[in-house]
Amino acid sequence: MDSTIKVAVTEPEYVKAQDLFEQAIDRGLECVCVPHADAACAQAVREHKAQHVVLGPESYPEHLYEAVQRRGVLARFGVGYDGLDLELATRHGLLCTNTPGVLDLSVAEHTMGLISAAARQTPLLNETTRRGDWQPTIGVELSGKGLTVIGCGPIGCRVARIASFGYGMRVTGCEVRAIDSDAMKRDYGFERVVSDFADAVSDADFVSLHIPSTAGTRGFMNRERLSQCRANAWLMNTARGAVVDEKALFDALRDGMIGGAALDVFEKEPYAPADGLKDLRELDNVIMTPHVGSTTTEACERMAERALDNIQLAIEGRFEEMDLLNQDVLKAGDR
Ligand code: 8YV
Image (cartoon, rainbow, N blue to C red; front, side, top):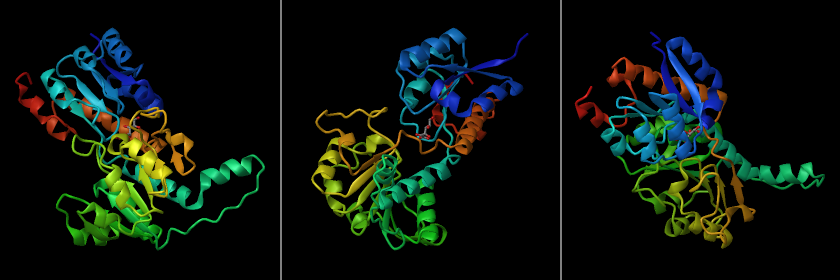
């Protein structure tokens, strides 16, 4: 009897680590590439009779949860799990996992790349130079500049460490959870960590968001908080689009309330303005990348590996070793 287990992998994730997904057959997991659009995804999962699904950051309607049999895993290829409905998954007896830790460095490096691009106007210089327009612009050094990291979790701490120990930036942390300030200073080079946003950004040249998207952080970067930043400050977002109110951001950028924004993530992806009259693409002081913070060969391989490990652990009943997000599902009785 064939004991191969079918795993559906959404297409954008499949292509990021294709070799690894193909090689999973060696451990009895047959990975099939399925479309990531909601209805098509659920239909393909059913057609393939996939028992588990590896998926990206998007949220899916109940169809997908219905298409996977009880005890199946919805394995996020990535750390943010705002797209997963944990309650719904638990009701359907599905285990939800993510891949914490394995992509922090890539996201932190991309954040620093955006900060550097903003400081030296790299996107503009690329454009002008390529069209034969020799227009050297004067940038600023990062050393000595103020960087405020909003959210001092693993990614925020990585950014702080590179910025402070590598670039010599003055790094302030903004964190509402209790933290060990001495360790933050010693291990990551924070000059100070405070809980008050206005205080944290008071002398920041760059403000970088590293908070997850939750009901409490939606639209976190609103008009009021934007107005508390310095007029020359750049906002960096490699976290989640939902934590920024894009209409308020547009107004702030247009009115000179802040200096610029470098965005890797958007309220709607691919980017589409919520209000056609407030299209961020029309502003010169905006740098955009298409949600690629974690998209490096190395991080993609680690995310694929960990997502598959989580599935394997579920199959073997080694639930304590999984990155299980909905522990409640274990109490559901049928395992
Ligand atoms: C995506 C991310 O999961 O980890 C996250 O939360 O947003 C990303 O890493 C990944 O790019 C999906 O392919």
